[in-house]
Length: 273
Length: 273
Image (cartoon, rainbow over all chains, first blue to last red; front, side, top):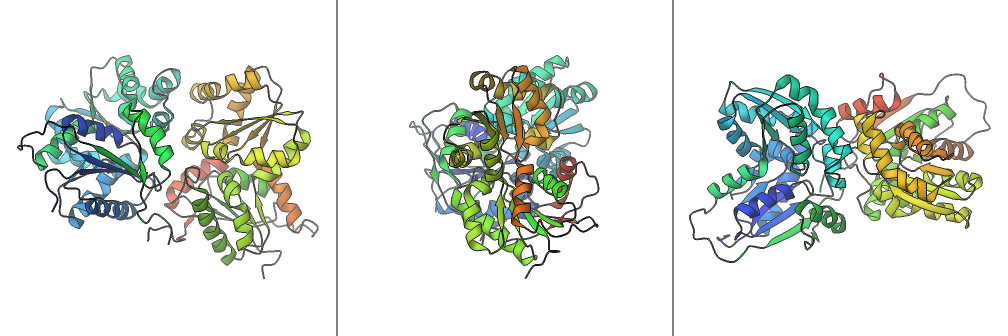
């Protein structure tokens, strides 16, 4: 039975969930984590809900084998399609990224919400449902921004190209919808936060940008042992991925701003039958 | 035994190979084709050579079951890593996209070649090897342009964003290397041909842009029955993909400029074991 010193498992379809992991390690610095990026099967957004659920259960069971005492699904698509299935399949607490930030925004918004995400997340309507469970009076617009992910992975976070991409996606929507709350509903988008904030400012809006990580960290702490004394030592993080670790490490170091991370390959049956 | 009226199979990791298919149907209008996009497992560029070879043999065998009398590997990564393995696995002619255009450029270049491709294609060095087999005196530079693929899939083919992206990737390389021949070594890049040509012009160069499709069509005709009389009727094209056909059709229609295409899902054992 996993104890308090056991790690918490965090998984994502690739490297994006590292932005969520960063929020978790900041909120729970003494806790150890195992991060698993399913880089062999990324992206999840274009796959069917059944496939995403099957992959997610597959990974969750592996993280349980590693002794994890709780799991975080750091992928928006997997949180949308697989949270219930994973909770049914395993016995430790499981937290997704969609619900916690939606609860927070539902509490704080003045009424107008903009959700930015991948095409898959927009199509899943997961944020619409999650916000709707908390409040029925919100006016919500969703906007898919497919180029934000490759921009973030390419490390083009500032300058003319990302600014123009953000303006192309957002200007009209911002001016017409005039949101007070904007959910960065994709794990990659926090890396483009400054550029997105620039587009918001250019539209003359004073909107709050919400990442999924901090709210997810709050729910994770509530589900785990928040009342135990905090150990003085820092927790460790172990990185696993299902494809070439070199690629994972190259992008992961840029995402975390940490040039010391290393990663191990893990085979979780990603080969075709 | 497949006869002259049998289709030719064309496969790619996704939709990109449709630009190659377009060249093939233009060159052989009476020929019927079956196109298979492995959209469930795209992208191949980040996967290991062994995995790409296994996937490619898997698809090639399926296309042979459909009665194909020849195969075209329309994917640069699969052409780089799997051409020999597929030729060993099946008995019909198999043509890749790397060799034919390399032979053409080796014949025509004045000596300075620039290869544009994905990170995977650049890492494979397939074009360096293919050009080197024909000529040893070429000065060759490779440049990965990872954002070109998502730009093409998003349909952002003109205007400030693709122009700035092309300038960022290419200006310095063009000015320093001064190529006379540029290989568009990724199936998506022909869609950005105008923008790439604009960057070449802005650098004051008079370089020729080579797509892989036309040269591949030439090799395919040489390998099949080019001397038989050409039937007067047009051939048909059947589209298959391994994930959601709706997504394939949406991007495929834009790629081919043909709003009438439809696609069928085909299961080729892409589920995890």
